[in-house]
Structures are given as C-alpha cells and as structure tokens.
Amino acid sequence: MEANMAINQLVFTLLLVTAIISVVIYLRFPPRFLNKIRYPSHIKPISHIYEVLPDGHHDTNRQTIHPYHNVTIELSHYACCAVKNLQGIHFLSKDAPSMPLSNCDAFECRCHYKHYQDRRREKLERRVDFGMTHDLFGAFGEKNQRGNKPDRRHKGD
Image (cartoon, rainbow, N blue to C red; front, side, top):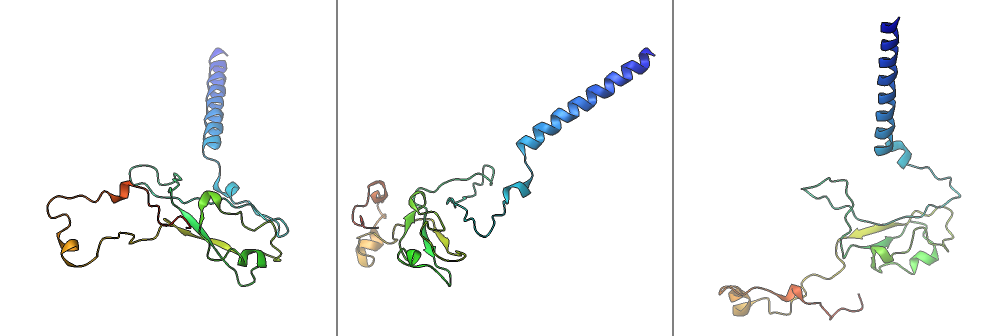
C-alpha cells in the first residue's frame, strides 16, 4: 500500500514538473502562427518600420536599427492622392508615416515601403578623383579622417 502511494506521489511530481516546464517553454517561445494576425479588409493595420541586420556573432533574429536606415513609399497601381504627394521623399525609419496613410481613400491600400540602408549620397568627397592627388593619397601613411566630421553640405536631404 505504501509502495503504491509512493509511486502515485512520484507520478504526480513528474506530471507537475512536466507541466511547469511546458508552460515556461510556451511562454518563452510562443507558436509562430500567433504572430500572423489576419486583419479584416475594412481594418487597416498600423505598420512599423525597422531593418533587420544579421549579425554574424549573435542571434540573427535580433532587430538592429541602422542609424541612417530610411524608406521611400512605393506606390501601388491604384495609389491615392495623399501618397502620391509623398512619392520620392526619403524618410528616416522613425519619421516615416504609417501605412496606410490616415487620409488614404483607396479601397485596399497596397502601397509599401522601399528600404535603403543609408540615405546619404555616395561619392561626397571633394578631392579630385584623378591625377597625382588621387594616386598619391595614402602613399605616405595619410588616413582619410573626413568620415569623423559631420557633413553639412546636404541639409535638405
């Protein structure tokens, strides 16, 4: 009788520990299908913009925001007038308007963001890109330190 009671107590303890471990795992790693919420066609979801940059030394699922990551709005075939006014404008990710726009009058908005890593223009060096100046730069150990100073030439971007 006591052996039977000890076995019942052991089984109960194992079931309790298994249940606790299962709850912890479920809370730590929820099912992936819960992340894909379906919205009815009359409800427009609010979008969030970020760029996922893979990091070779850490978990690749981490979200890292690039300091100059920006977006433009790519128009759909039936874009509304509100979004047409924003065509070609680069927004830093944190400053971009949520899609769909609040005054969007399209039946179903299909406009989306096009992501860019850096909105700054390339080739901003003023040094001559040919001749002796270009060929000899760095030959005597000079280092380009222009990247350490803020660039004030393109404040309109």
